[in-house]
Amino acid sequence: MAKEAQNQNQKTFTLTNDETGESIQLPVQDGTVGPSVIDVRKLYAQTGHFTFDPSFTATGSCKSRLTYIDGEEGILMHRGYTIEELAEHSSFLEVAYLLLYGDLPSSEQMTKFDHDITYHTMVHEQINYFYRGFRRDAHPMAIMCGIVGALAAFYHDSLDIHDPEQREISAHRLIAKIPTLAAMTYKYTIGQPFMYPRNDLNFSENFLYMCFGLPAEPYKVNPILANAMDKIMILHADHEQNASTSTVRLAGSSQANPFACISSGIASLWGPSHGGANQAVLEMLDEIGDKKNIPEFLEKAKDKDDPFLLMGFGHRVYKNFDPRAGVLKKACDEVLDDLGVHDPRLELAMELERIALEDPYFVDRKLFPNVDFYSGIILKAMGFPTSMFTVLFAVARTVGWISQWKEMVEEPTLRIGRPRQLYTGPAQRPYVPMNKRK
Ligand code: CMC
Image 1: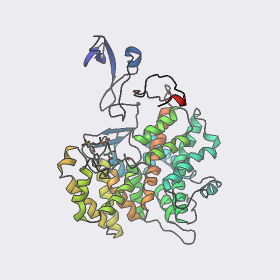
Image 2: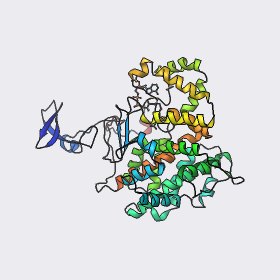
Image 3: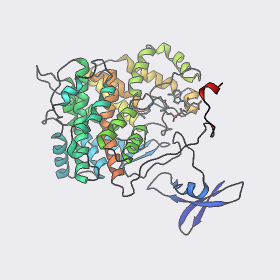
């Protein structure tokens, strides 16, 4: 039984053991906005019990100043700025600066940051040969897990996480080089030559150039696509303590180097419940094929005996709408309009959204389209194959991962993360020799 009490200005919860009648007081900590937390760090020492929250639905794993989400109201803010404002007025690199350093940059700070990132975009030439070890038909995310983890083998001079300068260089290297590696991965899988980065282009222009340019002919960056790419990057930059970010933090809590940590984040992002959903949405739309088949697929999604889920729907935190989905849907309309692309999948997606949002199953469970619902359609229109979608998510999220990692490593109280468990295996039993086993 728990009740809230006020104790010498320290808000507490009182937890009472109903069997013994013993009580302890647990301090409450307030954030700037959003729910407060009950500090259970001394719970085990005081009661001999752990808390149990396997999928972390009620657990705050850290303090963070980066990103705030209000899932009921559909609010996402980075360092206090709403995602809608950032998507409309900012650039991806400016948002990266904001996440890394805490405030929007002055023009001098932005010029320097832009320069620092731009001049780290090339990768060690030896990395070209590393690619050759992969099969050409490998999934791009499989290549990314390996290549990014391997960066620690190339940049020995920025692995000391206790040196602020090395931390900063690693952060810049990761933000700058992951787009180059992502583009190289794409080129490798389609058998085209790698394109070296171009320092006269901005972040998103350069990324498109490295993906779609060819050495044999000049490549003119389409400003509409570059703008849309920048918006997609901003919308995916950070998202609080999601699975991949928590993975990066947990890996980093053991003082592992940042390249290893980001590679662990990429692995976690790959799953279809997380970043892999953008690929899965497009595959699902192709499988549905026609508006007339929507009811059949909705029934499958509702059937608990069928593993099929409506990909791009639902979110652990957003229970009203995903603010990123709104911005992305608008960007998607603009890109398809500007490119004159008529993708029947967009109509199918809109019809699916309309029907699902009228269906009591989805309404009652507060299942709304998430960011991945529209990102696939826009990326497809830009010319990316579905297998690259999650890679693009990883390019953008690298900024969030490394900012969260930096925030954690810079905490004076950094300790290794070590969850406990509820053990449900056998109690102690004697070893039985093989010839006596039944
Ligand atoms: N289609 C059909 N039913 C669903 C769906 C869906 N997409 N999502 C959740 N449900 C049902 C679920 O079966 C459960 O029903 P019931 O209460 O009857 O058992 C209820 O809704 C609550 O779902 P949950 O599984 O407890 O929710 P969760 O918070 O554990 O999972 C989620 C969140 C995003 C993993 C899940 O909604 C999902 O798998 N969605 C599809 C994949 C997807 O689009 N993922 C991208 C998430 S946003 C970007 C990112 O994080 O990378």
